[in-house]
Amino acid sequence: MSKPVLCIIDVQPKFDAAARIVAQTIALVAKFRRSGFPIFLVEYFGYGRSHDSLCKAVSGYGPLYRVIKDLNDGSDEVISVAKINNVSLDRIVICGVNTCYCVCETATGIIKKIPCVIQPAKAALACGCAKFAPSTNCMADLIVRISMADRARKERELEQQRVGQQ
Ligand SMILES: [Zn+2]
Image 1 (tube, rainbow, N blue to C red):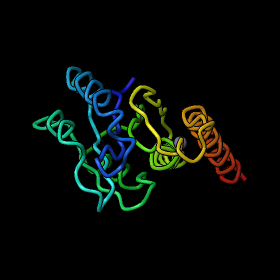
Image 2: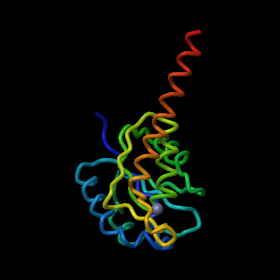
Image 3: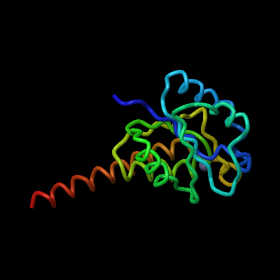
Image 4: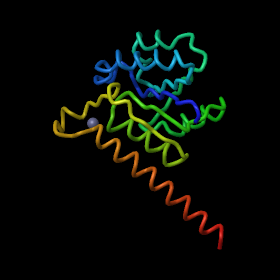
């Protein structure tokens, strides 16, 4: 089994929900640092740096990869940074904000493009959508969407194999 990668999405002060999970994100960073596993710090272009305490927690870490994305879906950027640095994305632990938007779009974007296992880190995920839809279960929705995207990729791969065999 390859090393898990921690993928931190948009824990930037300009996103309200980020403040709720900074401490939990830093706890995950500490865990990954102890094991020497890679950390991807993903930030939305134009929204400033990640929270100061998080920047401090990752500073000086060797296998830290900063990724700047300019859309909700940062999958292309994460995949290309991983490729350039020869980091395997077989196993991804994902956290950050907002669960229903950037986290979900990046996670489903990655799993649609490459075979991998994506595990949402529940304690370090937050979402601002509660304001508009208090009954939404962002976490459950995220898990369903990841598994749907994974199934879609697998079906496409099978289809390509069938076409290849004809
Ligand atoms: Zn949400």
